[in-house]
Image (cartoon, rainbow, N blue to C red; front, side, top):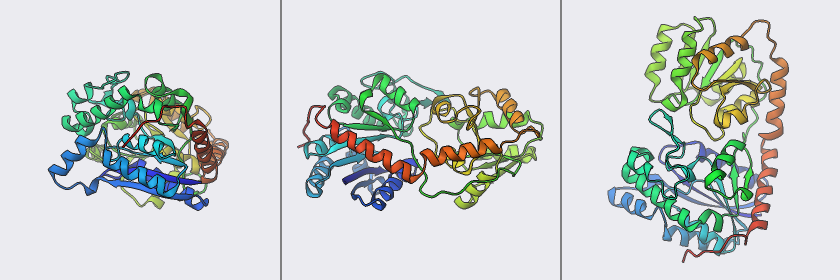
Amino acid sequence: MKIILCHNYFRERGGEDQVFEDELELLTSNGHDVTTFIKHNDDLVGAAQTLKVALSTPWNRGAAGELRDLVRETGAEVVHFHNWLPQISPAAFYAARKAGAAVVLTLHNYRWICPKGILFRDGALCEDCVGKTIPLPAVRHGCYHESKAGSAAVTAALGLHNVMKTTERVVDAFIALGNFARDKLTETALPADRVYLKPNFLTTDPGQGGGDGGFAMYLGRLSPEKKIDTLLEAWSKLGGTIPLKVFGGGPLTDIVERAAAQDPSIEYMGFAPNDEVIRQLGQARALVFTSGTYEGQPKTIIEAYAKGTPVIASRFGSMEDLVEHDVTGWHFAPGDSDDLARVVREVFATDRNLDPMRNSIRQRYLDFYTPEANHDMLIDVYQKAIANRGIGIKGTAD
């Protein structure tokens, strides 16, 4: 199959970049003819250039023209977009469609209903922009990168394409990472009949771990939306009885370091080589995932499943769907440190044998999160997109 993968890299590397690269490798290794269309925000130098890009965020005619020519040159059957913000713009959807390709868009976040993308503001969930054709609250609060100017550019893009009904007219298939994200986005923004489920995956199988390390593990960004306060409050109530290893960094690193200095059961590991992190994840009795946002599909949880490690997660957002209670892990009430402490005590009870659960979790990984399984699901979405092409109204990017 002839495919073009499109992606705009931000200056700070994120999960979307890795997914884009993983799918590029997956498709090329399976013999598909893949061309990339990439923009880098590192290329933006100076205020004038940054302003120019901001003004073209709603409709970048230049990028659309480049992509249209690339589709015609390669004969691509499918153009698959990951991040389009800010340099590609949804104008490229129209260009790809006009040039004859089916258009696929992966929904890595909640951007189509929230300019910030995560439905979280000032330490709490925020849905002020959900359902609004022009999401002006994001401008008032400066949600996008804490910038009112940046928020205005994203708001203008979403407002324009909501009015134009771009997602209905020229996107043939959307990829949602889970049921919660699909349902949330189709409530007000996207056509439900073209949103398909396909999870992320791991390019390399790390093998099952033994889970015999006797500790819980937190792995991820140390920031307010991850509810690090809930994690540390829960451990303060465990009285030093259960070891916790914290991997990662972020704006709340100093708070974690202070907690570790006061409580010998908490060990702050900082950043470690990926191989070591995955090894420790396999030794952990459980991964603790306390996020206070809806999340998309955290790679950390998939990595835990690959090692056979159960997950203690908020009963909230995509975690409620991804973590199956008493099957692949356990839920606790969101933001409730008492409930988290209760679940941790139960999981670490000395008479509790987790080996059968670990084997089932490992099988869950093998069934859904390997490259082999993911390739079949991705090609199925592409074929559906090709079949759907023509449902919408063709637009123009000339």
